Amino acid sequence: MSRMMDRLIDGSIFNAAHISKFRADLIAFCGVLLESAPMSHILKYPMAFYARPYIMDRFWIQGSARYSKEELLEILRRDFKAIASILGDKNFVFEDKPHEIDCTLFGHMASFTYLPFEHDAKTILLKEFPTITNHMERMGKMFFSEFKFRK
View 1 (tube, one colour):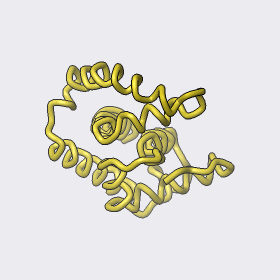
View 2 (tube, rainbow, N blue to C red):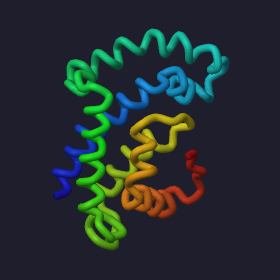
View 3 (cartoon, rainbow, N blue to C red):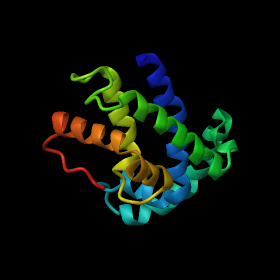
């Protein structure tokens, strides 16, 4: 089960969610990457301009960028639904103690959920899948209680 979830999260969800955030606002994403750099408010524009073809080429070669926006959102929904059904009413994937796959799930979901701009993957996860967002909150409190997560 752990390996299956890892492939689902690291393959399908990773690619679809990241295409969603890059298509939504690559400039804002570059701003997040550069936020501690001097002149980040200026540097994010050329970074986005030069990074866009490389990022989208990577996803095109991998295959995810060949899907329409609607197809990618449907893939995300199906993948989130699978994870939510595995979690069910348990606190963690394997009952009451976190496992490596719980960390993988938290890390990947956090990488697109806690960004300071809106995009489809974030909206779908937060509005339609409370089981997963509750899992994220538990993991965040357990391992990163001092960190202030953005929403």
